[in-house]
Image 1 (cartoon, protein in one colour):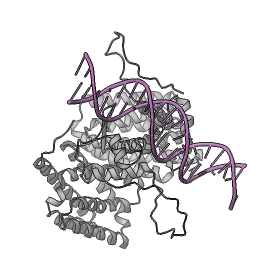
Image 2 (cartoon, chains in turn purple, orange, green, cyan; image 1 turned 135 degrees about the vertical axis):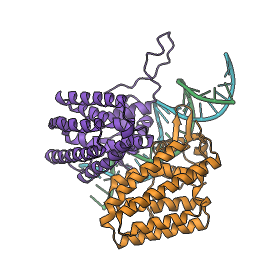
Image 3 (tube, chains in turn blue, red, cyan, green; image 1 turned 90 degrees about the vertical axis):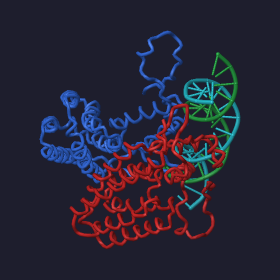
Amino acid sequence: MNQIQKPRARTGTSLPEFEAVLPMTRRAQVAETLRNLILSGRVAPGTQLVESRLASRFGVSRGSIREAIWELIEQGLLINRPYAGAFVVSVDDKTMTEAFSLRGALERYCFTQLWPKRNETFRKEFTTRHKALVKTIRARNHFDAIEAAMHFHSYPYEFSGNAVLLDVWRQLSKKIQLSFAMSQVIVRSVEFIGTSESYIAAALDDDLDAMHREINRHLELGVIAVRKLLRYNSVRAGD
Amino acid sequence: MNQIQKPRARTGTSLPEFEAVLPMTRRAQVAETLRNLILSGRVAPGTQLVESRLASRFGVSRGSIREAIWELIEQGLLINRPYAGAFVVSVDDKTMTEAFSLRGALERYCFTQLWPKRNETFRKEFTTRHKALVKTIRARNHFDAIEAAMHFHSYPYEFSGNAVLLDVWRQLSKKIQLSFAMSQVIVRSVEFIGTSESYIAAALDDDLDAMHREINRHLELGVIAVRKLLRYNSVRAGD
DNA sequence: CAGGATTTGTGCGTATGTATA
DNA sequence: ATATACATACGCACAAATCCT
C-alpha cells in the first residue's frame, strides 16, 4: 500500500517551481488512493472498508479515514449501511444500461455544443489521447486501459467549456468506469480498437448527424460487451 | 435553529408503522438542516460556516459538523479553501446559463423516455404537485415556493424509473435551486404561473415534439428571469 | 434467541499547520 | 512580523447498533 507522507515544510533552498503541489490534505490523499483502487477494480465489489484497519494500514487517524470514506460515498463508489459499514458498490445490469443510455444523450448534447468550436487543438489532443488508449489496450494492461479510456472519452466534455456538463459527466463516468472495472471489458475485447477508430474519425469529420449516429452505435456496442462479460464473470450483485 | 434529537431507542409499544424513519445519524440530520438553510437562501452566498460555532449551536461535536459540511461540499453547495474554511457558493451567470441549457437536454431525454409510460398515476401526481406549487406562489411564500417548484419539476425524473438519470438530476437541480434562491425569481414573477400552466398542459398531452418545444421555451424564460433578477439584486460573485 | 464480538457513530481534549487581520 | 482564529489531524473513550456464534 502507499504510505501517506506528511507534507513537509519546504525549508531548504530547493527549486520552488519544480515540486508538484503537495498541499493535499490527508483526507484527499487517502480518498484518491482508495478511489484508484476501486475504480481500477483492484478492490472487489461488496468488499467492506473497515475504518480501523485502513487507519493502521495507511498510518493515519480514524478520523481522516472516515472523512475519505464519506467522500467516496458521496461520489457513489461506496454505500453506507449505518452502524454496519461502508461497502464497495456493485453495478447491476439495470444501472449499467441506464448509465450508457444517459451517456448517449449527454454525449450528443456535448458534441452539438462543441461542434462549431473544434479547432486544431481539439484534433491534436483528442488524437493523442486516442493513441495512448490504443497503446494500453494492445499492451493488454487492464488497469491502465480503463484509465486511458476514461481520459480519452472525457476530452470532449473538457473541451466543451461547459463546467456544469463536465461535472455531470464526471459523476456519470464513475458508474461507467466501475462497470468497466467489473467486467474487464477492455482488455478482453481488442476489437474495441476498431470501434473507437470510427468514433474518433467521425468526431474529427464535419457531419454532426453522422457523429450522433456514431455515438449511438459506439455506446450500444459498449453496453452489449459489458453486459455479456458481466454475466460471464458472474459477479454477484451483493445486497 | 432546529434541535437535533438523539434517536431514542423505541422501547415502548407505540405504533411501529406510524413514526417516520428516525435512524438518521447526527451527520445526516445536520447536513439536511444546513442544506435547507442554504437552498432556501436563508444563508447568503459567501458566508463562512465555522465548525466550532455550528457545533455549539447544534449541540453536537465538531466531528459531526465537519462530516456534514463535507457532505455539502461534495454536493457542490459549499466550497472548501484548505485551512481557511467552508463557504456557501455563489452561482455566477455562466454557471446558471450552462445549468439551464444542460437541463434542457436532460429534460427532453427524460420525457422521451417516460412518454409511452405515462398513465393515470402520472397525470394525477404531476397535477397535484403543480397545484401545490401555484398555491405557494400565490401566497408569495418564497422559501416554500422554491421547494414546491423543485418537487414539481422532479416528478418526471422520478417517474421515468431511471435511477441514474434521477441521480444526475438531483445533482444538477441543486445548482438551479441555488440560483432560484439567490434571485428570488419565483415570488417576484407571478407570471410564472402561466408559464408552468402551458408546460404541464403539454406534458399531459400527446405531442412529444410539442413538449420538447415547451421545455425549451420554459427554460429559456427561466434563465432570462433569473439572470435579470440576479443583476437587479446585484449579488456579488464572491471569490 | 441470547449474548458477546466487531464495527460504526459520537464526543472531547489537544497539538499543529495555515490563513488572515 | 505578530498575533489570533480557525481548520486539520491525532488519540482515546464510550455509546449504539449490527453481525455472528
